[in-house]
Length: 152
Image (cartoon, rainbow, N blue to C red; front, side, top):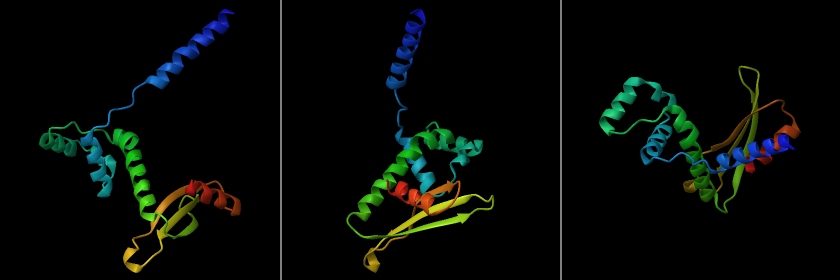
């Protein structure tokens, strides 16, 4: 009986702390810094450079977040914003899809899902890589699963 109560108490203590733990506060500076770095194709690990961080902190009077903070907290938000913009852009338009599989230099099977919007020439944009995944093996079944998961 005591053991059951002890286990129950442990579970009750863990569950509320996990559920009620507040998430990280989103800083507008961090969000805009992340957006600027990503849109300029500047790797986030450049924030590990002490000279760059010192320069940014000196002239912005802001604490520069770590690369890890941006990657874990802000990049997923940017990713979701980008997907939302793409969904809006596609709307009811037709699209073309290309599934490609290749083997990289380490002999891993890599599948790619690329798409573009069909329409008049002036409305066509560029192709988008929607998903890339390393697969254990490549066959009709794994590619079909990759396709449906990518649309998900």
